Image 1 (cartoon, one colour):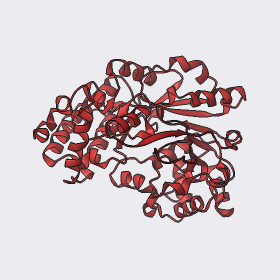
Image 2 (image 1 turned 90 degrees about the vertical axis):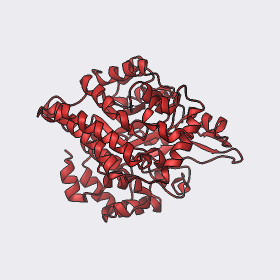
Image 3 (image 1 turned 180 degrees about the vertical axis):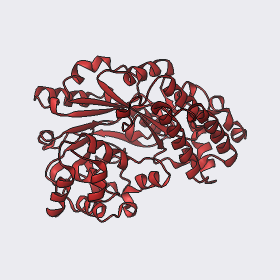
Length: 427
């Protein structure tokens, strides 16, 4: 029913559908120890980058009322008026698109166009005519806890309990985690939801995620709902198969951004031997659809071809014409930790990474089959991120300082895992 090209033609190519249909609902936060607490928040998406995040706090103990607050209505209006690149809080997606890679805005639009049962154009026009007010949440991102068994080097305590422990014990931050109860209208919101994206943290390990799945199954709502879950593939999904089969559809977003020692360094706590087995199980699951997310950093950029070859040799990707529109592997620049991204990689090291990618690309480029074409384009996306990100000399000392701190608790030092960096860590 929803054609993405028609949506862009009717609503503008820079529209973001999330402020109209969605909500990122967060009931936890990391706060200073001296602070008493923090209210729940509901914002358009997880990567909103407001200078003052308090403007997205829940008002009147109501998710519904908050989604019609002036800040929400203004954002909807700005998107309709084609001001995407001028919206300060949306600069992360704007940066991605200017870097030549797909942004969460584009990915979410594609996702909603594919899976929403509502007539998107008609619904958005009704919202516009109703002074930009909305009535139902159609797609809900639910973030109940930061509980996670990894301490990824590019992460923060708000997204990982293990990382929060690192921040307290190693970085000496004076902070604590706050977990709040859901607001009174939370369960009534679920009556009209078509999509629920569980986020965290490691969602498969979060008790709140299991409680909501059980509730939806008990109320006979699950059969009409598509759910997605973020996972680091540290555990097998097979134990949840019985629950998953009660839902309309299940999609796993699997974070795999390296192989062997590289991912074990970047995602501290990961064990490649088991992680790879669990990821491949998901990638080949008969009921679960899988999207792999690769966060491209200054750590894994030199071995990006190793990851791409692993995915290719595992058979993961489009093999039939009907699969071409599917999103299988996302390449994501580092988010909120710019000094760990490509801007920190000096030109001489950048050329090493690019050379390996260009050489690796030759494996696919002379084959016009759908599968090989997909991998040619995947390599090109990685190259595009590197080439479109200017080197910033100010990031290099920040990168080194960051890594030296990580090395104090990692089982191997970065220079043992990525020897290309060794000359920069000799002093």
